[in-house]
Image 1: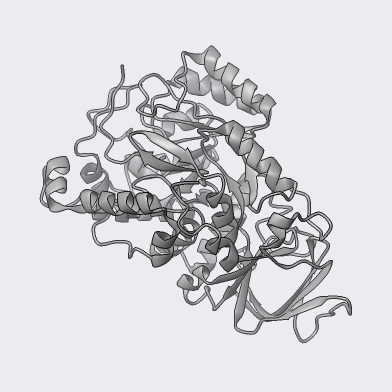
Image 2: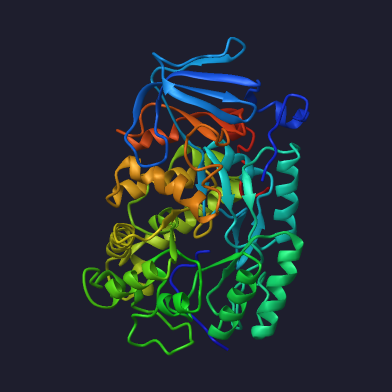
Length: 480
């Protein structure tokens, strides 16, 4: 049996009209009119272009009808007008590592089918890829209920169950028995309605190759949080995306055995000393770019392991159930205490600050080399990264990594839409696209933290009240 001592375990919608929205949904809707005009608003369109001040956006029947300077815009007489000076509109975020489950402890994860869809939508995440499902049938049913207007939530790309090999630490994962089993699993779940897959830590090269071939044959994609297989080998096998970045890539460890997920007692310290500008890591970046393999950034789940950060927000604690709150705070203390650091890493100081900084540098270098960097949060780890809130934090951390606010928003919206093949519909603000946009008080192009000040989230032209959605899940994350 293969074993690992990994230090960290990471884990098309119809528009709604007044007639279609059910009573449970309607309590969260702030704007629902065939024509809506957002006037005198700042626009960050998601393309990477600079902010445009004093704009007017007209929404018509779930789509963006026009975008123009307020001084010259034509506003239909029947439009409901929102005058928004001091506000910014950005595209709905496209969360590319956005599970619907949450860590319950002991290798068990609970489906947050009630709270997480609401939190994603409340925070401006209008489309998600679940990027690994432990209850794929549940995820598919949630997707249907959202599409039918029965519950609030984002548009969903449901990932099939983890494609995991023998030796998994997670009790809820099927362990593949070989390439034929991998092909069977992929085809079964494509028939059931998923459209993407995630390979996991102990999968073999033959199993991954079979899964990729089966998925590509039916126009589905495969991403991976890998350990037994390095990034460059995965690229050669045809994988489409890689999760988490450099800190999970084992191919550089001198002690790694091919095809095995290695023990990693000094992994973070080793990674933090790698040179990105030349040598093996630089070559790996070039290889991924040449093979058109994307990388998904999940900085918030790593940040939790860095002593002294992040500042724990009251909104996060308020959303957690009492048991989940106590467990998270205990996990945070345990992970960053000197005694536990000495026990785990055989040193007096945590290796996480340097490794976290190196991960940021890697993601910046990958994007600047021409790689397609995606953004997600991964609400697993020690339990402090929550749906929606973590997506916003991801954008803030991309700015800390060196991207401008405009670039970070582009990564978190347009790049995700591009990977999903939906850039013609979502991901940027332009006439003809779906009206998936977020109204923010402030100016995140100058102060990225303003991205947390979401007030209205439009999905297919229907405006949801962010505060009401968040309040509706107070004390429930970790329970439902």
